Image 1: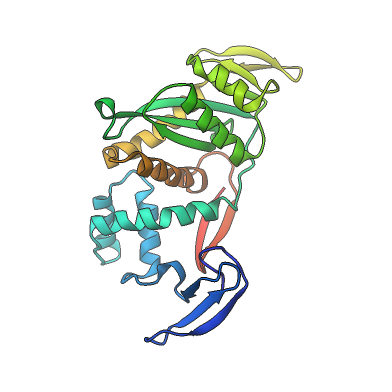
Image 2: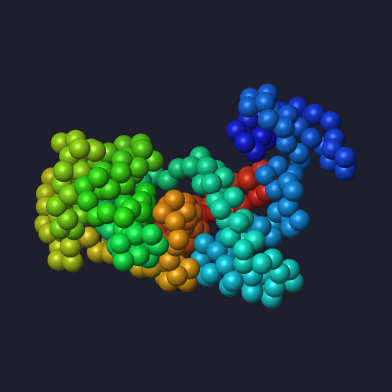
Length: 274
């Protein structure tokens, strides 16, 4: 039995509860859990919760998830229940996927766009997305400001996740990217400002045509999903849900060349593509 809290294999049996369910104890984090793992104390089965999470990761609202579950599974949890499942299990799914890294390329694109978040000026915030040349999303970040500090945060997250600095960073005309790129990656990373029109550069003895159209294209996919959820109420939840969407985009959405990866989520098989 794998510990659902620290993923340790150093677990031992630790008696039964009043209903006769086997309980375990982890020697690593010393926490106790039952054989249902993170799905304990839920009236609905684990497979239904997984179905709800993956339905929500597509351009569909929580009410739309409820309608689909009623039609195809014959079970009708409320839309509030669906939302609570997402907030609870999304961090665990993000943690599991981080152990299945993607081989990112060394040419990165960064761009930002408006999204709707309450408690901000005019109910607007900025979604920052860093992607590579294979259209994989490396990192996301949502902030109320469009400045150099937000650019530094999203680029630093991308560097930590990829484990290296890019050779080329392509951005639009926002002046903060130049300083953020130099501060985050150093002088070895070449910063290129490009938008729709291609710019010719020489990289490793080869002539390359660089545009930022790839980043603009990637921004269209979260736009469809954000339109279905009709904005957010809190900034922290927005960042969590954008990380959740990144999992769907990188591992489940067909784009580019992928290989199938099998993930065991507390003994619940999940097939993802990469």
